[in-house]
Image (cartoon, rainbow over all chains, first blue to last red; front, side, top):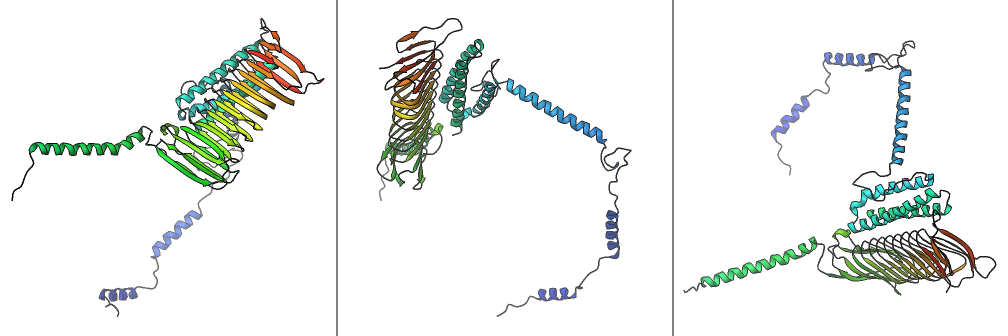
Amino acid sequence: MSAPIDPRDRQLDAAARALPQEISPPPELLSRVQAAIGERRVRPLPTAVAPAAGLAVARGHRPFAVPRRFAAAAALLLVGALAGAGVMWLRQRDATPEVAMSGAPIGGTTPIAGHTAEFAAYDRAAIDLALLLEQRRVTLRAGTVAVIERSLAQIDTAMAEVRAALARDPASRTLTDVMRRLYDQKLDLLKRSTALSIS
Amino acid sequence: MIVCHPAPTTLRRRTRGRWRAAGFAVLLALAPAALASQGTAAPRRIDQRLPLSRTGLVKVFNHVGAVHVVGWAKDTVAVTGTLTTPHQFFMGGSASGIKLGLEGDAATAGTGAELTVSVPMGARVWVRTSSASVEVEGLTGAVDVGTVEGAVRVSGSGTDYAIESMAGDIQVTGSPAYLRTKSAGGRITWSGTSEDVALSTVSGAIVATSGVVTRARFESVTGPIRYTGGIVRGGTLTLDSHAGDVSAAISRLATAELEVDAPVSDVLGTRTARGTGDVRRVSITRTIGQESFPSARITLRSFKGRATVTQP
């Protein structure tokens, strides 16, 4: 049994049938669209610049124009300045062992005059680890921090004594070995401490 | 009908009693929360077990309290103990490896947990704690223990031991082929025989009593080092302390090249005094023993302390 058809449905059907099958846009609208397309098609592209003028881009389409050789010189200057700044920063970083983050970092090292390149590399590694440990010290218990600081202080004291001896006897292989082992112990302790702080 | 109303005093007593009962109920309800906020909790017993292959890996985590690992002749890991921490105990894995321990961090662990973990004696055991002490015994596999402040005691016939404690003492009784112990402020004590042993601490003392060693290195920054034992042919033995005394009582020795570098030394009865001026240390190189060429190398160094070599 089908439901009775609503009279409004019949009216809607009839109105739909009365609609035209297709509708053409108004003639003036079509002409305006064609004119707009034609305008874009013929828009002038940036033109090549006369070599004598030495311009890199067309005038009128860039906010400003720079001579090519000036641009190259400026680029060279910029690169040089950045490289110089980088080198200066690296030297300053290498020569400045203690970086204040929250007071003195744990395990900061004071390089000595006359230390070898090997010890300088040790110093850099120690500083990096000390800074890492400093960032993570809040994750460690106060008692653990005290043990680490005390141990590092003992190693630093020992290193200072060996440095003084090395200053008196720079050619001593034994003292160099002692110093190397102290560095190893310090780096090992710093590594273990940072590992503790993230575990 | 007659209705009997209670006297006013009786009503007051009843009301007061109800308030008291309600107060007790509230206190009882709040007690666990209060304990938990202080990091402690009512003691809970645990008793769990899982199957594990004979050489499987067992990882144990427990920040505070104690961990006792025991090897047994079963293919099962069994954990018993008492938890006095709000943290939850976990245990899971497969027949090849099991993880177990307490969740959470050390700061909120309260008084922690005391765990006894029985594992197949050939299992490889890995333990990490903050301040919980660790004791391992009866294992024949590898043992790896790391703790911040806990004391560590390991005994057995394991193949290799790696033990670290930042502040706790380390005591090893056994003869692993490979032994590494590291501490910062703790004392290290070892008794056994090993092919490759390295004991290192910053301020703690090192006391090693060995049958023989093949490659042994003991080092401390400020602590004293004492070794009693032998060294095999071709072996090396190094005792190195910056400020502490170093002493070696060498037994079962054929022939060795001996190198001593210290301000003050006593080498087999020959004593040297502290140098003067810039010559503060005295280096001695000599051969001891009866054979024509040295078969082992012994080195004792102390930057500030005394070096002593004896042959009992």
